[in-house]
Image (cartoon, rainbow, N blue to C red):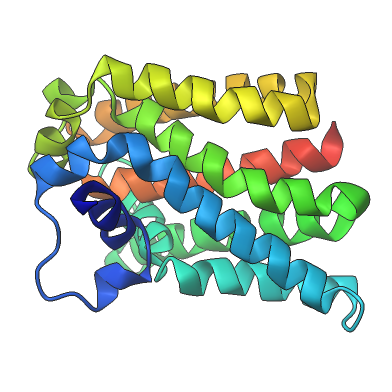
Length: 235
């Protein structure tokens, strides 16, 4: 019970209101439950879409759904995305302080626009996409975290040190098996793409900044959600 509570506190808007956030070791131990948080978010998105789709235009619906996801997560992942791309080494070295902040803002805008446009064109696959995307994105975050403790600093190092191989193996099966049943081979292609994205991001962020941080988790979640929606809309 403590683990699932810790996962929700770490990944949702609850993180904005609690006085005492879960400890890094507890977050690491709860890593196998991250996709459950994604499933709750996905179910909420799917139900909201069903409730609104007969009453609002598709452009308004897609914007509403993306805004709801930002609200439900407390924008913690978008904040991590911005800080990741504002970090020295990731931003252009010749930029000023103001221009470095712009890099993070542009990253947020690109991710949000890709999400909105993908939802616009999903049509009959919308419900499944909304249900599965948050789940697979948080699985991708687990792939990013596992084995990264040697290249991380602060809380990120402690979290990664508490993520075990069985976490990744169990979550991979529990995520991809139902997704493959619902989407067929498309789910496997998406899973492969997200895992490659997670590993590439890990190598890139480490190379550019010298150490991985918690902010990188948010960048991976946001990038994975955007990529997952784009692939579902395209395949």
